[in-house]
Length: 130
Image (tube, rainbow, N blue to C red):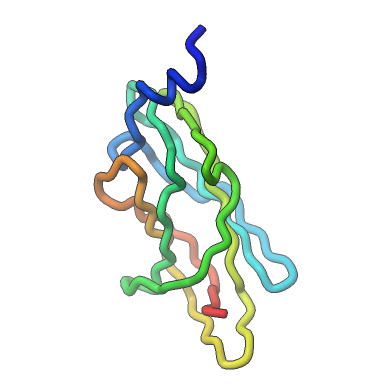
């Protein structure tokens, strides 16, 4: 059996050519919202999710710089086998503080560590710049 560190060292980074992204779940509580994006490896080879994919929320074609509290795989190394999936949960504020603006977000824009074109995932949520 191959050691996990050796497997990670010989596995290429996941790119947008390897991964399909969909919304797996959305939840709200106490002024925060969480959405989990499911990342499915559609290629014929394993790929590596490290570092954490970059994520932006997009307001109907304009990037919106919404602070995200990321967690889940984080700094951990994830090898996604062909046909396998990984979960990418993220949290943000959905309640403005003071004069902090809130906006309706249409999509999440996801950049994978291996590059390629960004993945657009429809989310349709309210996000605040608090």
